Image (cartoon, rainbow, N blue to C red; front, side, top):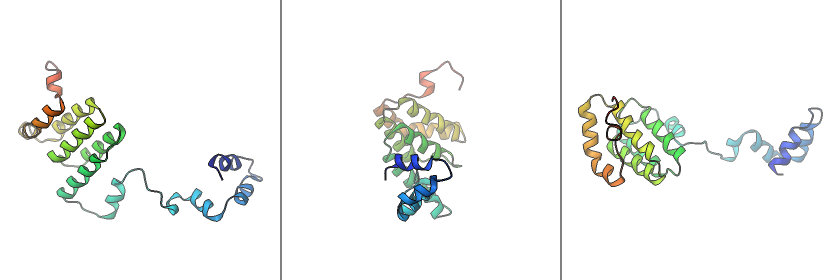
Length: 159
């Protein structure tokens, strides 16, 4: 039964709507309509499911997980969602994670997000030396991808 017909039957008056709907649907289809998890439907993202499976995550596991997440990015929404998830933790993502994020931003052709990644690093680092270390390590990739820093784009703006 098409989903449109199911919706049409379900939207009828309460006196006979569910009876008609129940009559037209098999028990498997009804269970799937009520509870998508019974047919193996996955959630929107994999991050929450992975965190539910194990309590604590080491920095190396965090790094490898987000490297994989950024390698699978196919659009701007996924890129920004993964960046929000990565920067939400109480740590600064490793340069390899930042590198994967920058490559993903280039792959989806999102220059503003690439610039904002460095703003996120600046906000997360504890001091200016740590920020400079990140910039130094990521400089070859920045030059290869053509990503400028906000400080370079707007030198007169307060930082």
